[in-house]
Amino acid sequence: MPPLPTTGDESLRDRGRLVVQCADRPGIVAAISRFLFEQGANIIQSDQHSTDPSGGRFFLRIEFALDGLDERLTGLQDDFAPVADQFALTHHWVTAAERRKLAIFVSLEDHCLLELLWQRRSGDLQADIVAVISNHADLGYIARDWGVPFHHVPITAATRDEAEGRQQEILAESGADLAVLARYMQILSPEFTTAWRGRVINIHHSFLPAFAGARPFHQAHARGVKLIGATAHYVTADLDAGPIIEQDVRRVDHRDDPADLRRISRQTERAVLARAVAWHVQDRVLIDGNKTIVFAG
Image (spheres, rainbow, N blue to C red):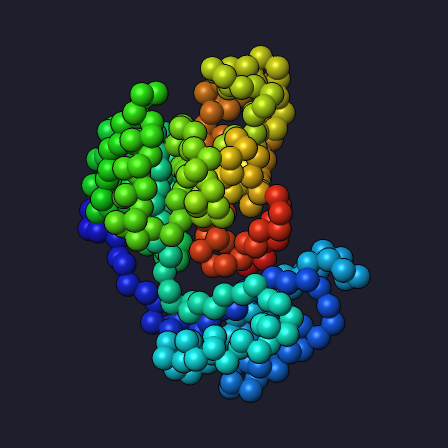
């Protein structure tokens, strides 16, 4: 299979995004819209949310078109400083053509990895997959078939710190700016999750914490569960407790055996993870404490 393409979309070269967070107060949208108008930009899409208009947090994501944006982006950021200072904005600007770089962490299950690779090839995931990292060698053939560098980093209790150090080296060497745990069955250290806060996405099935441990699908079948779900979230030092990005459920019944539950769970996991990653790379997810504001497209 030929390598995944790594070029940006030329049609997006003059389209940009501005993402803003700040304390809510009157005049924010007016000031930002006026600034873009004065720069000659045309606002294409605007999403905003206030947690409490009388004193909460304000979140804004704007997509705009501006001729020559590539050359003008740095100047735009500099010129925007007075507006940012006036409202104490936390903000960032990007061109829509800029592609994020993903490193995918896997163990033995391939369904989420394959979904992300396919989403990338089809053009539905606007990012480049620059590395696959695994504590097992089993899925190396998939990465190689898709033309993605594969890194086998074994982990034992005695070598965990050394292995994580090697993972950090791979992330730096590949230029990755997002790590995706695509059914990666290892716990990242607090040091890792702190350094990569808001830049690690995990997926897990909905049987936690009710059916933890071995054979969760058999446990769920024995209890006669009626719903199977999946959750994609940012990773924090608290296991499976980071800000939730996306969730979904599928209904099941008495006719579904443990193998059926596993198959349905995999289908749900890969779809939920793909949506969460796509929204992240499009700057549609803003973290608000231990929850998220998601401006889904």
